[in-house]
Image (cartoon, rainbow, N blue to C red; front, side, top):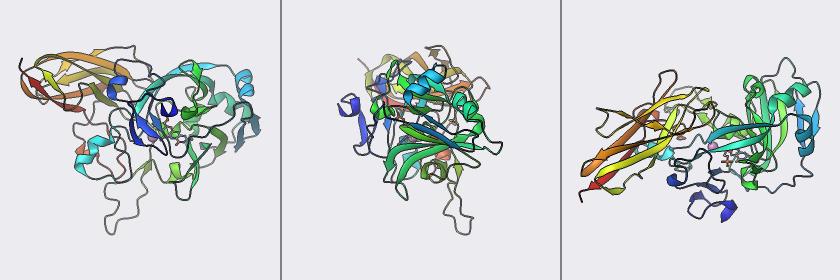
Length: 363
Ligand SMILES: Nc1nc2c(c(=O)[nH]1)N[C@H]1C(S)=C(S)[C@@H](COP(=O)(O)O)O[C@H]1N2
Ligand SMILES: [Mo]
């Protein structure tokens, strides 16, 4: 079992290790099993020693901090929160029919997982450190070295000060009640609920308060949404916008795309995730290309930071059947119908309505 993961992970890359579980491993489970939680890495997974680990907090602060895990545990109140992490590349596979996306893994439906995280609030540390009035972004620098960055550098990222001070951002040392595993950032990682996974920096070592976004490769170059026309002659060079909040999204986890099933009742299930701390209001499923929709049952209590599982049993006639789903949020917004308009050169943020094609056989 590489990196503590189940044997049937879909491994996009062995080194650095990048893998998602088979969709069925996520279905119906509010918390993702540790051995199924997707794993996204830009460098070798470091093995850090918990007892000697230190976290430095500096930059635009009145008081620098230098903390051990014990300091974190004893100085600040413990917080536990259920939050979904989703890679910006989740569902990239659905964009590939509209254009190549070289150098990026073709993630399917499962570069997303949910855990109960335990740690302390970043805002508690920052209030101890006292932010300078010019503070704009809070940068997290990690221990792993990303050889694929230009130049090679430790993984890092930053978030706006307003988000850093919101109570939901944690420095976490436990996941689903167990000590954080090495693959997920031990001894301590950042968890930024509601933001793309890239901002939840693992193996964090330094926190720097800055007057501007981080110039780390993963903030300044990668994880930006470029214009689809970045190479158009005469246009201004376009470095795109840094991705922060996730978009309203959903996917179908069962049945599998391409499945052959007996005609008759088929249970369709999946997940939905709201954006901007909204809630999922409903999820609908169509088996007639969107002419009619039926409402799915939402399976777990809705929370601001976590996905919601849904399911619906539909009756499918013999032949080829296309199943489409769409989620709605508490503001009345729904997902874009087609992935075509969402295609971008890095393949980020595909939140189009999920579709699977099945063949139903008469008995
Ligand atoms: N130090 C470090 N933190 C990191 C990364 C990384 O490569 N190094 N990958 C990021 C990305 S792109 C994602 S989607 C999430 C994945 O978290 P997971 O591997 O725990 O699922 O971690 C983020 N934090
Ligand atoms: Mo990611």
